[in-house]
Each structure stands twice: as structure tokens, then as C-alpha cells.
Image 1 (tube, one colour):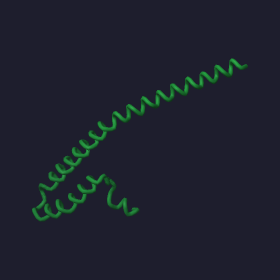
Image 2 (cartoon, rainbow, N blue to C red; image 1 turned 180 degrees about the vertical axis):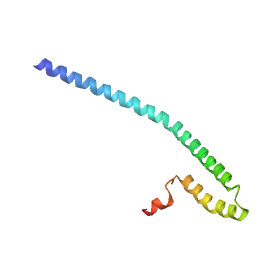
Image 3 (tube, rainbow, N blue to C red; image 1 turned 90 degrees about the horizontal axis):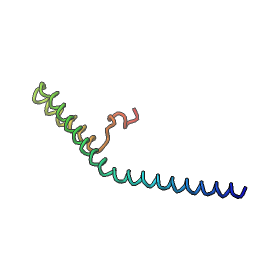
Image 4 (tube, helix red, strand yellow; image 1 turned 60 degrees about the vertical axis):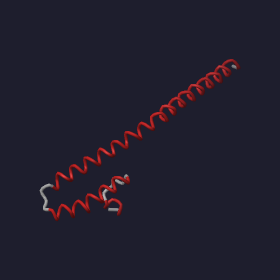
Length: 97
């Protein structure tokens, strides 16, 4: 019985070390990946914003000059500022609608 308990205790200790090593490796991998993820996220944000501006310019091509100015200055400006702040929810979502 004593041998069995010692064997069980030794197995638990071995498993604990194994789990510790596994978690430590995973944490190091995540820490290594974070700067790359941040860089990719910023590149993606810039690409999305540029595509958004390009699409809006395409949609505005057929509008008269006065409407283009109004839309570009209002809607596009607000949408771009919201996106740059990271707030992607529609305006009505923040009002509880």
C-alpha cells in the first residue's frame, strides 16, 4: 500500500512538472506571437480603411459636386473616425436600439 501511494505521488509530481512545462512553452509562444499579431492587425486596419475610402469615392463619382462635398465631409468623415477609434458598431447600436 505504501509503495502504491509513493508511486501515485511520484506520478502526480511528474504530471505537474509536465503541465508546468507545457503551459510555460505555450505562454512563451503567445508572447513571441503578440508583436507580429499587433503588426498584422494594424496593417489590416489600414487596408480596410483604404478599401472603404476607395469604395466611397467610387460611389460618389456620379453625384453632383454639392452632394459629394456634403457626403464626403459628413458620412465619410464620421465613419472613418469611428473606424480609426476601433468602434465598428453602427451609430444606433450605441443608443440601445
